[in-house]
Image 1: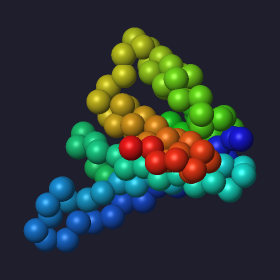
Image 2: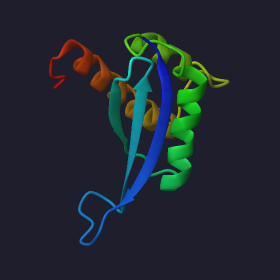
Image 3: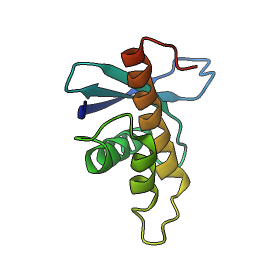
Amino acid sequence: MKITDVKTWVVGNPPPGIGGKYFIFVRLTTDSGVVGYGEAYNATFSAHVTAKMIEDMAERYLVGRDPHDIETFFRRAYSSGFTQRPDVSGMGCFSALEIACWDIIGKEANKPVY
């Protein structure tokens, strides 16, 4: 099984805005049709920039790979920077993608992932 597609979207949060001004969601799809969802929290950049960062990270380090191999995905994403020290924004993006991978893993195993 491999990740074949990534999509992000930003959803505004109506007043009173509990939980923030917006939510950033990601959807991963596998070649077998299993879909996993994740959510990002990242206050460093605008929501739409963060969504593009998530897509970029997924396309570079996750699309075409097995969603079960989260440790390898983390190592690739973590070590991609010059100093091999990720920033808060990068880890926010990684976190959203990892959540979506775990969602896929749970659905495949027919087990909850809490």
